[in-house]
Image (tube, rainbow, N blue to C red; front, side, top):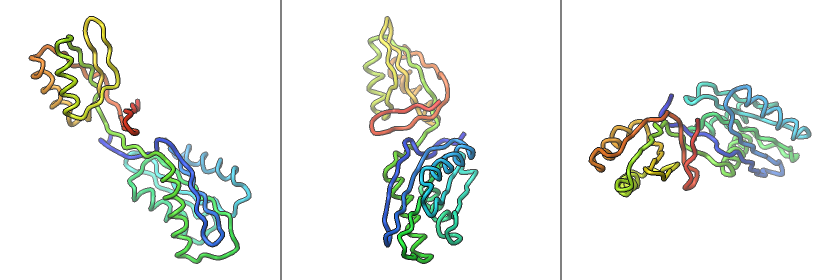
Length: 217
């Protein structure tokens, strides 16, 4: 498992016009090559009357699979520039389809490369990109005397809790990047004079969307 990678949290659609040709960039999150191919086919059916539906996708947390298609445009003028935009942003598990409605004016090789690149960028601008971090999910149990200190330490470390239960004790659940787990555990134990109990519940990925912490099993 990689420690960090970027992907699409919510896909989006953006559009540009170049010399009366419409370029519609549609972006989505996918987990496999089969999902990417199915998405491309769905967009082709949605825009069945378009001249071209060019595509590019990257699969795997290490960008193991990278594919693209010019769908009838001159070679290297559509799919490859689209793929370059996705890989240039370091995105994984993403698919892009750019639909072109021909406006009657030829754009030339350079014009096509710029148009297809811009359409993907516009689609990404209307999407939500998330950076996922490999984390240990810690369950911290403390008495009411220790919760203030723990909350102070979490805030100091920039760690946001995802759940807090108040019964006869307080149980706080937090995701922490794997390379910071030992440091945080040491600070909490020292800060509470050993009264807090800390368990590593599981490993998972988490990311931030605005101020919201999103967990990915």
